Image (tube, rainbow, N blue to C red):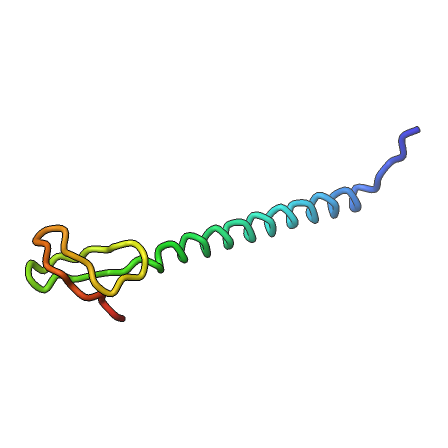
Length: 78
């Protein structure tokens, strides 16, 4: 036998379900952004003093060669 459900209870259930889905999506996107920002943050930025080129190298490095002229430059510190 089917029981009837009050319309107010049904709408409250749908609103709660929608809120749960939105909170889940927010948590997933926040976690994804943290992972992406960590990946970007571990890169090191360099500025060539010889040819004035800005470039980035992966991982934390203190020195890296310029891709244009080959001059060894130190990491930019902010």
